[in-house]
Image 1 (cartoon, helix red, strand yellow):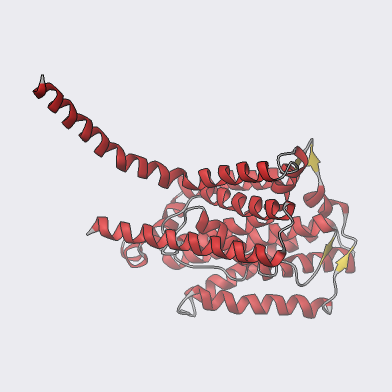
Image 2 (cartoon, rainbow, N blue to C red; image 1 turned 60 degrees about the vertical axis):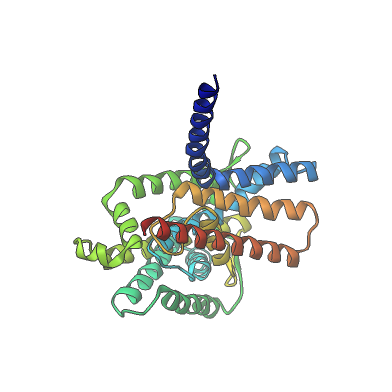
Length: 337
């Protein structure tokens, strides 16, 4: 009888030992989703206004701009880079769209094309600066274009906003399909497309490969420069699309739009599980990171927390997310060794 009990104890210990890594793996995979759920529970108990249809729709509506910027930022971070110019590109592209449609009186569709085109062109410039001028890090090139884009936006309009945008442009920022904002549905479509792009296309796999090991990717025949140019062009395109939504929402374009929006985008990507070291990150993880930032800001507003304290809280969340990323990287290196 004692032998049977001893054998059962050994077997139970083995099962427990085997289950521990699975729990860690499960938490690592769904930890951000659990954090989002906990935020929902906390703010629902703290404010009766939080868990209402109007407020939830307001959250996803407000999150749409950061969602698009974060998607472009994800691609840059996947290649172990960064794009500090997304906020400036949002401002410049939307300002030139307003110039084309309001000041010059051209067709709104031309304005939309201008907005997307300007964002993509500035993203292309970021990629070319990094690959053709061989600048040491995208931090340098995108910081430069950040100032250039903001400066051009201020010069072109004399630092004055342009209001009275066409109804077609307003539609992207204010339209609703039932209770659901059109901007949220647009973001959802873009995210599905980007998930397919990263998961099922050759270029998507190359992006992960470049971020994992740039030199190994180059030696395996991947055109690293082309991949990086593609990544930063798409990031600029996402900034242009975000500019359309923002301008449509407030029915105006202003040169200081998107100021420091790059910090929220970086935070959302890292909170969503991407790594500053490159090669790690997913579209849906980024979506969860975007929602955590949006829910946090909305909930703190409902609790009448000051804007200054909100900045401190977001900063603490960013530091925590980066620290978790560092721990994950150390664990990967330890496992390899």
